[in-house]
Every structure is written in C-alpha cells, then in structure tokens.
Length: 220
Image (tube, rainbow, N blue to C red; front, side):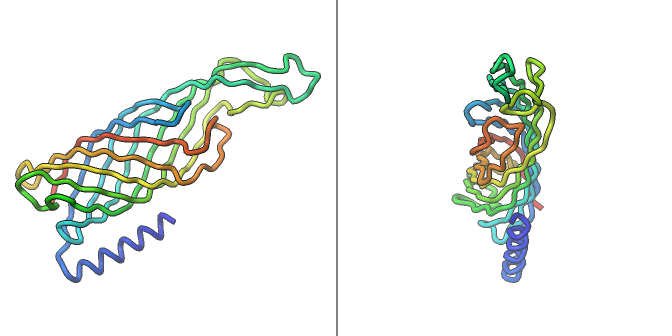
C-alpha cells in the first residue's frame, strides 16, 4: 500500500514538473511524542528527517523518517491457570514495558498562508499522508511465570510490530535568511491497523501518538 502511494506521488510530481520548476527542501527537527493510548501512556523525545518536493510554491510532496527513544509504562496483569488442578489459579504481576517507535511517511503538504519561497510574514501549512510505524516492545515480568501452566496476557521478552497510519499535521514557519526557515509543527499518527501482538496488552488503536516539533528547513 505504501509503495503504491509513493509511486502515485512520484508520477504526480513528474506531471507537475512539466508545468513549473519544482523546488526542493530538506528539514530536520527535535520532537516530543506522547502516546495517548490508555494503559500505554508515555512521553519521549525524538527526531524527524524530512524532504519536500515542491510541485508549486503552494504544494509539495513529502517523505520523512522519524525515530524516538524508549517509552516506558507498566501493566497490572493477571496470569490464569491452564488447569483446574494448578494452584494458585491466578497470579497477579506487573509488566515493565518499553515501546520504541520509528516511522516512514509519505504525503501531501499545502501552504494555507504564504508559500515555500516566501521571505516575509508567517507561513501556515497543513499536511496529510500515509505512514508505516516500525515498533519494538520489550517486556519484563515482576515474577517468573511458567507459561506451560499459566496463560499470560503478554509475553516476556522482545518483539517487533508494525502499524499503518494516517498522518495529519499543521505547522507554521518563518524565514530567517539565506534560504533558512524555522518551523513549529503538531501532528499525530492515527493507526489504521491493529495486527495482534502477544507482546502488547492492548492492540486496538495502539499506539495513538501526537507530536510537537520545532525545526529548521533549508530551501534549495
């Protein structure tokens, strides 16, 4: 799906380039990410590296790669016995979890006020795209549980998971000089898939994250 969208955007950029000389920008930022999913809430820092390909001064396609540090949270869970003869029938325990997210996203960006070449005033833009989240879970149980005797809600250890997302965003930027711009941006990753993972206690609509970023754009 992501591959098809990338091909479509490439074709669209090629068509537009026949009518206007496309621009090119490189962006990087420092970002704060919060996971809003109940039971998995945490706040971490990270970075996004982004390239913009301008069809016109108002419109652009973007490609970005984002990565964040480990988010830590706890789950209060209960393991249940597989057999009625096993005692005790339940074991309450705490799962110490770490979730780390990376993402690749491609999409469309449009300036609502100003444009990518403006050298006066404030630019305001909106963006929307499709992303692929590459996640990693690390779980450590507070007690040792024999999984041959008990069913556990989440497994101990490490595992990777993936999620497809929709990525809306809104930003403002200002020209600094010498083709440099400073920008602030808010965006979120809305999960569209919830492939079950035995290393995540709640898979539905998870992770659901929001980001606030500040960074620099250089125009070429």
